[in-house]
Length: 399
Image (cartoon, rainbow, N blue to C red; front, side):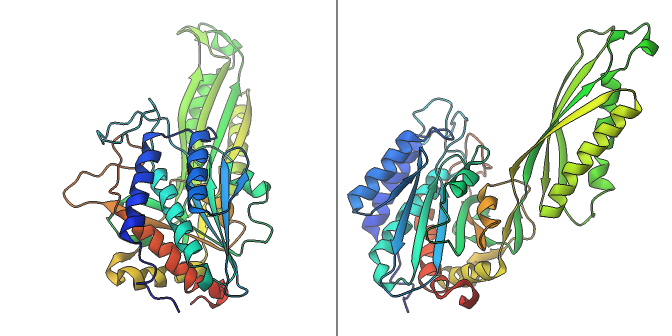
């Protein structure tokens, strides 16, 4: 069995990875525009002599085939896209692309996966089965993970389990956060178009006021959280945009509401959709108007599989020590499209802490978000050790 000392990231590789991270951070690209990022990843893999496969316009995956007999097919996902954020970190390797920034740590995720590819490829004589390392575009957009799945990234051969991490500024640097069950919420959007009948405010009885209907819907939507959902199950219903009306003395004939929902179970996610549609239509009808609802499914919740999570947690404890592995008390109501992978294969998604003592904490998507590069080897060692020890035995035998 491989020891934790054997998978430690050597200093020369670490220095190369730090340079890779700086390059990625300097040259961020938005979702589905990661052409230079993709070309750079390809250039690194070619330099290392590691075969790869292109998928879609900017996606890449690497299959590392073990030389130690048959075994499971494990997948690892890293997201490669950046955000439309103007960087304000003053780092010497700050973004050179105005208005675009790696404000969510995807430059770190990509670098960690590249390092994991190198480590696993060098140790494939110890590996049973195979590992598919997926560099995924478009995580910050809708449907990117699902597009890769539809393109067959989980097939030929079928992937048996998936892993992913996310840098997390709310845990101390080098700490691993694990969560059984839901770790992130679903994220769906809705657009409610309310149609009334326009008229003059002096004669309101001849009109149907879309703004009045809108106010009633706004008043009722929170009851889907407070009265229609379990008080111990987190859900969110939020309206963030309203457009309607033309003048102070005109009865509005149309109002459009735009909002989002979050849920940590598949059942609550579907329930919110049907409730929002039914509530809006019925309120509009009661006031003599009409409501049309466009409900846009985006990301499912990320629900961690117990066995894969146990394998990851046990491996992290052996690598870092028990004091460095934290059980997260509650899910994040943020979303990640890794949920599309987790819906199909047993998976775990964990947090890798980046908070440094004495330094201010900036949340994900903040223009001053940053992390220290020394976290990169930690992520690589967790992935490598979990795969080469427990997970290559098969998920059902991993613990």
